[in-house]
Image (cartoon, one colour):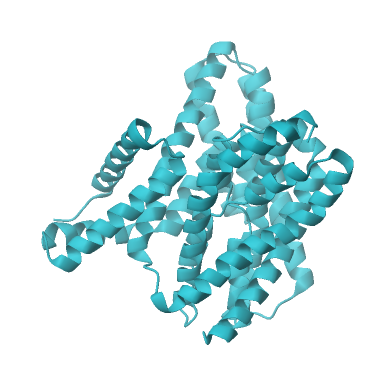
Length: 420
């Protein structure tokens, strides 16, 4: 008996519903943390039952069904468009414009610097630990892990209290820096696979073309949709229009080879700032915001459950434990090294040392990094990179996810009072 896609989706939603109920009723953990823990617990339970030989047929089908889920396609091909659109609609576009220089520097130069720091550091650590890891593959790891994950950051930001400025910078950086990271990742993988020689000028041009092209596409499609919505007042049609906008912009961007994530972010920003506020009646506004809030909550829960279940697909290798620990330290240090120069300038002008701390600790890494790692071609370095990526992502979601809200409650009100 094979497990259909419908059966699998139903099973995931049942687990999400049960884990969500238990969390709300007993533990009160952040949703992302609770779902990752639920996924890890399910993976550990199924693996234990499989090893013990209990209900081998049923457990075997369950394990095979989970392995059949193409995590990179699920994240990058489907869920990302909806989650980024929902997140972008929450961002204050006017505040984003005021902080554009800070966000642009963190999302571009910050990603490149962090990639080189983490990649070079991991390569050095691998040599010290006797692990065979070429420099190009280490740089590829830096590219996939350094951009802050917009889905994880959005989930974490919902749990804390922030000044509007700090929220805009956190979300703006996370929404835009993955496009740069994905392009650098692709170039590093090509070099590591001996498919191409590095060309810095070509790489910079490719990043600019994909990012600016995606942004232009998203803004244009968003503006066209907003203009069309101003001519009608029907909440059902307008909800469908926003859904069509998110899906079509992402699909078109992929077809014309510009950044799909940045395109859907551009469309979401414009819809949240212009469409919801100026093109919709009060009733339609409530339906649209309610619909996208529900989409965001449900898909986030499913995604973080899948993240925990990936323990079955890519079980960590014990021989790389030392390298994984080194990677956790390197990624954290690189985040601080990237944020501090910006923070020093920010502090001199605004007294925002506390805001800098929140920003540095808010660089959460999540599902996108793991999806990129699982998309790596087969090579001797792949098992080590999968173990290291899984360790960094799980540590980031659990440790930062559990502590970030408390840190934000402690520090963000001060930053808000000072205008940070």
